Length: 247
Image: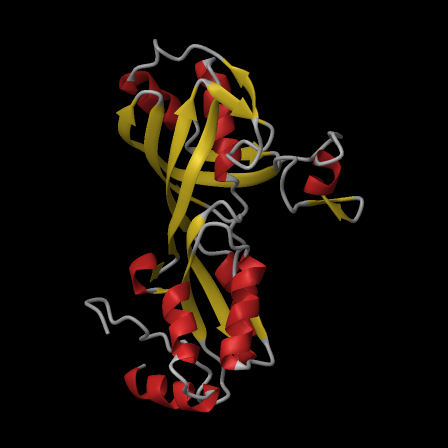
């Protein structure tokens, strides 16, 4: 349905073999919100996503239905690509716009050349601690449970790999970038660490996932398109049949 064959992966479970579905998650929605909405639209008994996106992030969410949910773990392990914007000179508790600014420093001496060379330092394999404002578990509870109570707990670092970290634009104090990385990478933690290395601090202001393995954002449907499938009055069975013919 577009130049790349949108919907060619078959978003609907037409033959009970399960499907892999691509969706462009909007800002403010959790990954669970998207799955819940899709379950309602498709009346799918079994559905799950392959890699969480923070509510403040947007972009490609890979969703599996039926027997294809067995592929979720494999898909989670695929390489990810993101584009984003960071703001220099500020720090927040969550490393992004979810929480208020807690520290500010002068960043006027930071050049694009220094940004580029600093980004290169963070390419390669490394240990990264999950941020306190995250769903990573500690003592059976997500870290954000403790963070919202003002507590900081010790977190073990996990090995990640940043394959590419490119600065694409710099209009002080905002920096646009592109990152290609392994599963489990917290891009906002990466941004926070860059800010520490620069000595001025930095926080993530926007993040968009553009690729998961060979799946591309431009092939995804928006939530408006998904909701429209149901709003036009067709039954879930009719929707499945219609898109089975185009998949």
